[in-house]
Length: 95
Image 1 (tube, helix red, strand yellow):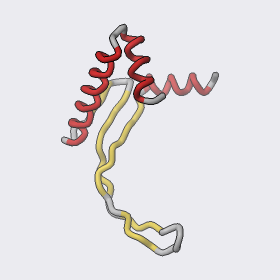
Image 2 (image 1 turned 90 degrees about the vertical axis):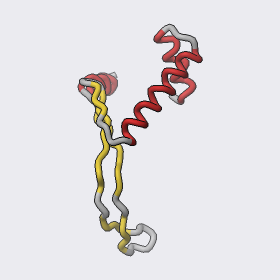
Image 3 (image 1 turned 135 degrees about the vertical axis):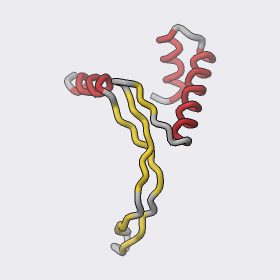
């Protein structure tokens, strides 16, 4: 499902106009982006946890030349599904 499809589906689900649904998605994505950029942890209990994690520099191998290369570390975003999402995925597997 792409962004436009999601906006239409959410508008139908929440009984909103498409422009209102789009505004909700845009404001939510901006809020989450700002919170992640400032290093805040987002935890919607039972549903989803979003946080950041520092990753150290490490050595890897260039697959074309098989020579060792340095892979730079940095900050990565970590998504952890809550019990509600895990249960939904598990029930989808059994279909």
